[in-house]
Length: 404
Length: 157
Image 1 (cartoon, helix red, strand yellow):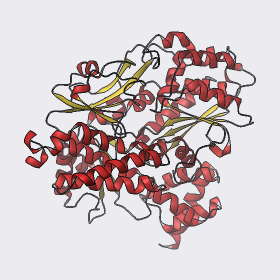
Image 2 (spheres, rainbow over the protein chains, first blue to last red):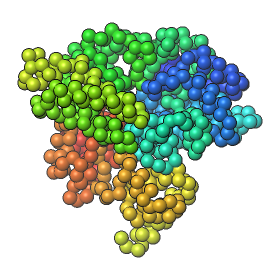
Image 3 (cartoon, chains in turn red, blue):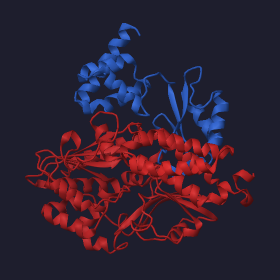
Image 4 (cartoon, rainbow over the protein chains, first blue to last red):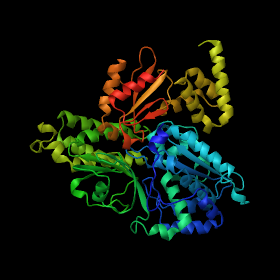
């Protein structure tokens, strides 16, 4: 049922531009591995999961790692609140993602690709497996792909079991290996010691989709879009208070106000960029741009209008982090609980400013001391919402919570 | 558990192990299959999986306790999950939850007396543009109104 409801015809400059299944594989197999890496380097493509690591560097290092077994993992554990672009890509354009995986496998010298699909997207499992089977029939997967003698590659889909932290690449690998999804200490990085101790490149769904287009149209074509430091386009998952929520493709560098106009958002008070672990941008900063050099994002854009209670929003985010912290390291496990308690104190009007300031300090400690990105970024909304909306939250004279 | 049931479950787990292989990396897929079919992974099932994968049963328990979609205690025959994350929250999650609680006579997190439903919150289901979202077992429903939610529950056997 969901398949029909969600399928739409989409157009866009890069990701949503024309593409035919298998094209990138055909072209890539006629190129040398070095040529593909150079195209990627020219494109300046950065990882689309949010961290923004240069894809060409990751693949170059994995390609250079010596091993007779390597893996390419597609990170489809899209768990960041407000993000759903990967669902759309996998549902509507699996050819872009899978072709990108085959290209990646060829470039780094992997024999096996694994899609780590989040458990919440279980309804995609069957269609994706059917799609892979059709690719095998056309020899786009399997032994000696398209007659290329020294290249065999296959893709499997692995279903996650509902853990946000598994989007972190080392936790994802732990999970693939049948363990609790607890992040590893780094180094070593997966490019050297990944799945089963072998060199592994973990790439976001959207990154792989971009690779298919870059192979077809070239790195310099891709780099024409966006800004100097943020090339290409980005898929934005837009939700919240607007008339037209959904997935949009815009070149990097679009202003927040332009995006809000495009999705017909009215009376907007704030926008949460980058999901729960991102930053809350108030109205006064809507002329800022979405780009790695200004407001970076994995694509989540949640819009709040004037009627929304920002403390309630913050509480929702902190409850999420308390739920999803893996519990391995102390700053994250205990810190998030303390921050949530702080929010509840404000809610009840039983707080002191000195305590809240201590909690902000604790948040900064978590950013430094947590083991992985979860605890390093979970204090972001606490710090940015309490700072940017202090009038609303603390000042009774402005009709704030404590004046109600 | 009767001996016949135990034998049937053992055979089933063996077939999963054959399907995915007896490597440790098959563990989550095997547990997922058992979970889907029985809505929980009993102590006996955990021991069987451990035996066939040649690992300690506590390793299996440790993994089950980590993941939100795996559980060792039995739940109702049908699992209803309502997305609690902010986008769905803003689109009226609370009304949905209240309607379901009233209709089934339980609080969220509980199982109905006839064991037909367990109702839980879920973290972001990735359907933020079409909230509020609700899942019944492996099916998801979009833009669910309180009235529609109750209607959907009525259709479940």
